[in-house]
Length: 320
Length: 289
View (tube, rainbow over the protein chains, first blue to last red):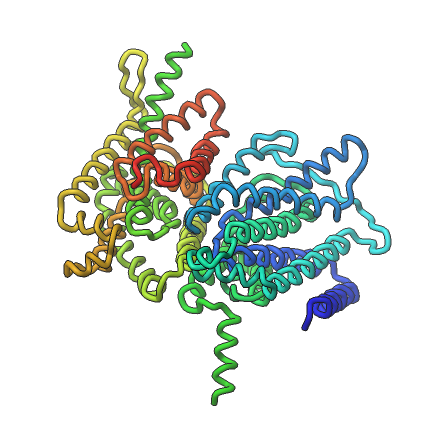
């Protein structure tokens, strides 16, 4: 399937999903669905750097929070001059901010071994959080309120609008991931993952490719984070920089499978739906525990994730 | 008065650095020498804090004594974890990505289990010396900080002696340089790595006890130490225990001065900023090869 055709199919599926949700008409579905969609974007974003290039990013929550706080910042600026910015524009701005962060981060650390990059991303998370806590314009440690408009033209309910935006972002990120995977860029990424030294020796511009991956991945994180203040209504550093985002960003692709765009999507769909159910029925602490245990279990027992399990299952079926 | 403040900030920083050295010793062995990126290390330190807390509040034993008694338990835990790590990752070939995710998962699971068992309240212990302090002119040494710092230095000295004087210690240093050459000397590198990793885990027991003597502990306290310990380890130079000690004291002093003059909310950024700077400017660290 070529890219335009794939985009159309994906958009059709997204539209069908939205119409089905509208017909059911339960707003809780939109609230829960938004979280699941947000995690599909986050997992896909992580996988572009982590799965394709093999560079582990532990600071996903930091990139996400940069998107969140860029919205808070421009919302506050908009309030001061009485020109509220539309959310799609805020998403683009958040994406640019996080992309720039990825670029700077990459320049500092990507020349080193992958392990140092991983540790530096963790460090980055804390540095950004410290800055936000000390920055009173965006609320500091007290947090900031964002008042969403109560009515939206055409769609009516605000959460439907947010859901639709996130749905669009999911389509965008999946198409981006699939396109990268099948282009020469993706092949370049794979050479870095498999043997960076050999790639370098064969003339692959590894640093430039890694920077591209960091920027794309960072921008997607930022775009996923930008509508979040409108979703939650009140942001404080603890919720925006929640370690759960970092853990989920790693756990979902690992559980789904990191080799293709399907893995993070499947992992995010299953895991975050499961989390929604557990949070409602048991407790949110239990949901994090199960995420952690699933991550460890999959990493040890099924290194290729659910997609890998499925592939070996179907391969066996063909042989017999 | 400013001068007094500065002197006391430096003294507090040195004692804090002594404590950081204990926290980092394990990482310096596992990450620096064995190339095992044990991100879960701070999580196990918090586990050590809680064990010290339970035993010390129930039986009235000093937390540091509890930690010394708990050393074998953590040693065994380390042996177990290394066993899983070796079987699932090292044996299958180099795949650092999954190994990292494994330890990240462990860190997270340890934290959530502690939250489920103890809740998210601060826990503290009472020690005989908690309130006391030693005064020398304008200099003040709170015993709450001084005792952990001194025990930590003793532990560091013992580790350094062990690594440089005994056969197994030297083998650990050798395995970090060339495991294959070690194999040719008829030494099993896996066994050496298992022992070294277990030692690194055992230091968690002591570091955890120091932590809860110094300040109240939360299940999530470990997170602030992740970046800090790796910052110290990288700044000191991978695999160099003396370098680790110098870096720990340095970061302790800088953080303490930042806290005294700019407020505690900026302290976390200090070590992380230094880490980013080290990685960008001199990745081999102060005493690195």
